[in-house]
Figure 1 (cartoon, rainbow, N blue to C red):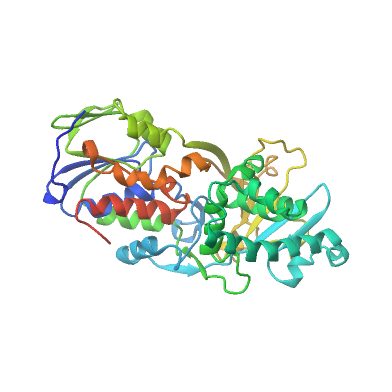
Figure 2: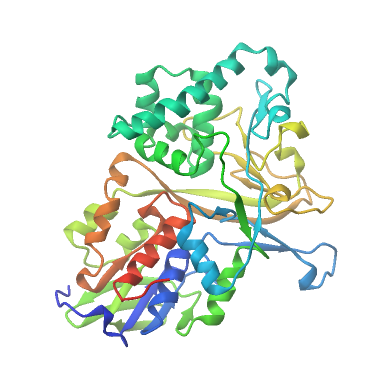
Length: 433
């Protein structure tokens, strides 16, 4: 392992960046200004969770008439995504207004609502006369005020959200039909794991995204032309070398450099940026230090299937009960059942076609024949108190042994968190957006 210190701001360094998601893309974009960057990605294309399907509007459609539909990263807003929005401006990529709302449907009980206004909340008319529905609304209002106060006083520290809700005596109907489904939908977490989410991080995220304020919600946007538009813009401006379909098998730190091994052979670089999931970063290192092992090993990931289709039966049965994000409870769910969410892309990306385009996370059944358009799989970090306790300590790792770490896991797991961590690595090289 190398213990030699080098001056990262000197320029003309040979830097390997491993992992082609948003963290690696921003790091590569900035570091390549004055250094020689080689960008490794195991998949055939860059982007990570940025994936845009191109759907022909008719048989034999020309590429320019295809419909771009995002399947991973979809929406962002200006207040909570400052790094990413600055990056888009840097690239000259445009945005368009989106529509964000949440709906819940339990097929077993018939209970449903959509956070789209009075009509959506009362999509099932009997909600108006349902005591449990009003108890849920009371719980939402109580949580919005009480959790915000407890965040400010430090009362949430060291607790899971399940422990906090039990301690405060929250109604189970509020938990099971609002807070925990929304938590599972936001973080793509199995419904049974949502109780274990760190309460402080959850409430801070809700407050930052104004989910505790039912009036002053931010305007959400999507990338005009599909999210992969920014990936293509990056590639056009990138001065380094991109190597897709090039999985790295190992990273070894030496006295005078970093050795990278792929199926094409072995190369040596002056520094390496590991822009991969935490568990992958640990696996790639042949000689992890005790601190690297301590910070990377607590992170766990869940694989989620993501399908694009036109089967409207994956949306709530009543049109008034539909929203942009639709949580459909699985009647056969167990503690480990993956979260099931259907994103109504017509709403999210202003699609005016005569079909309902739906992206479903972990479908409980197969879409109807001839409706499936694309089938993918993404891995999402699972948040625990132990894992989140490592986040700030990653700052002490960057630059040590010619190695840097970045990824969305160092924040809340969203595009801005990945962008911010990639930009933070670039600052060691004297670069910023």
